[in-house]
Image (cartoon, rainbow, N blue to C red; front, top):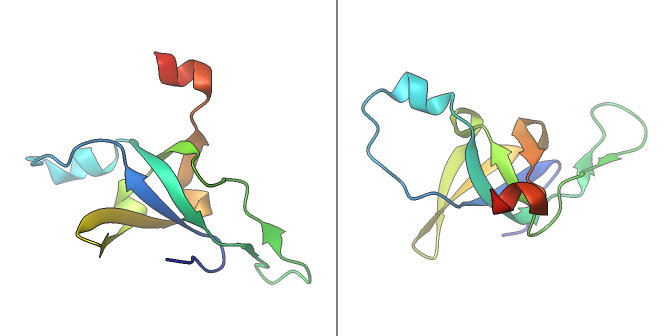
Length: 95
C-alpha cells in the first residue's frame, strides 16, 4: 500500500491481546515497524514538509489515534506522522 500525505503504515511488533480496560490500554504507547510512508504534507504552506520517519524504522505510536487495516490477512495501523511518538534507536532496542 502506497501512503499519501503524511500517513504512515505500521506493522505492530506486539501480539494483539484481549483488553479489559480499553481506555487505559489505548493511552499506552505501542511498538511498531514502519512499512510505508507518504511523502509529506504542505499543511497550507507553499512547500510540502517531508516526513521524518523512514521505512523499517521501529517506532512508538499512539494506537488510539490509529486506523486498523487488514492487508493480506495481517493487521496494520495507519497513523499521521504526528501520532508517531518516537523512533526507537538500536541501543534502546537491546534493552
